[in-house]
Image (tube, rainbow, N blue to C red; front, side, top):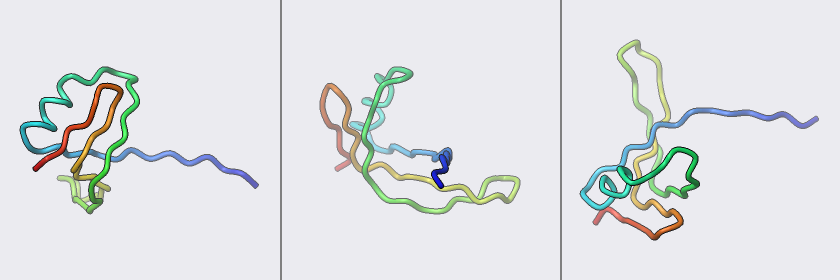
Length: 66
Protein backbone atom coordinates (compact mmCIF):
# COMPACT_ATOMS: atom_id res chain seq x y z
CA UNK A 1 0.00 0.00 0.00
CA UNK A 2 1.40 3.41 -1.00
CA UNK A 3 0.40 6.51 0.95
CA UNK A 4 1.30 10.09 0.35
CA UNK A 5 1.97 12.27 3.37
CA UNK A 6 2.71 15.96 3.53
CA UNK A 7 3.72 18.31 6.30
CA UNK A 8 4.65 21.93 6.68
CA UNK A 9 8.07 22.74 8.12
CA UNK A 10 9.08 26.23 9.21
CA UNK A 11 12.55 27.23 7.98
CA UNK A 12 14.53 29.79 9.96
CA UNK A 13 17.30 31.45 7.96
CA UNK A 14 19.46 33.71 10.14
CA UNK A 15 22.48 35.71 9.09
CA UNK A 16 23.05 38.33 6.42
CA UNK A 17 23.88 36.00 3.50
CA UNK A 18 20.92 33.67 4.06
CA UNK A 19 18.47 36.51 4.72
CA UNK A 20 19.54 38.30 1.54
CA UNK A 21 19.15 35.13 -0.52
CA UNK A 22 15.71 34.40 0.95
CA UNK A 23 14.46 37.85 -0.01
CA UNK A 24 15.34 37.04 -3.63
CA UNK A 25 13.45 33.72 -3.75
CA UNK A 26 10.33 33.49 -5.87
CA UNK A 27 7.17 31.48 -5.25
CA UNK A 28 7.50 28.00 -6.75
CA UNK A 29 11.30 28.11 -6.94
CA UNK A 30 13.01 24.84 -6.03
CA UNK A 31 15.59 25.06 -3.26
CA UNK A 32 17.62 22.63 -1.17
CA UNK A 33 18.06 23.54 2.49
CA UNK A 34 20.50 21.92 4.89
CA UNK A 35 20.74 22.56 8.60
CA UNK A 36 19.33 21.03 11.75
CA UNK A 37 15.81 20.22 12.91
CA UNK A 38 14.42 21.19 16.29
CA UNK A 39 11.09 21.44 18.05
CA UNK A 40 9.36 24.74 18.70
CA UNK A 41 6.13 25.28 20.63
CA UNK A 42 3.76 27.91 19.25
CA UNK A 43 1.58 30.23 21.32
CA UNK A 44 -1.26 27.71 21.38
CA UNK A 45 1.04 25.07 22.87
CA UNK A 46 1.27 22.93 19.73
CA UNK A 47 4.65 21.53 18.79
CA UNK A 48 6.10 22.40 15.37
CA UNK A 49 9.09 21.06 13.45
CA UNK A 50 11.58 23.84 12.63
CA UNK A 51 14.51 23.61 10.23
CA UNK A 52 17.33 26.01 11.12
CA UNK A 53 19.06 26.64 7.78
CA UNK A 54 22.84 26.53 7.55
CA UNK A 55 22.90 26.47 3.75
CA UNK A 56 20.38 27.21 1.00
CA UNK A 57 21.08 26.09 -2.55
CA UNK A 58 19.01 27.29 -5.49
CA UNK A 59 19.50 27.75 -9.22
CA UNK A 60 21.79 30.75 -8.82
CA UNK A 61 24.24 29.61 -6.14
CA UNK A 62 24.70 28.88 -2.48
CA UNK A 63 24.55 31.08 0.61
CA UNK A 64 25.83 29.91 3.97
CA UNK A 65 25.62 31.36 7.45
CA UNK A 66 29.20 31.68 8.66
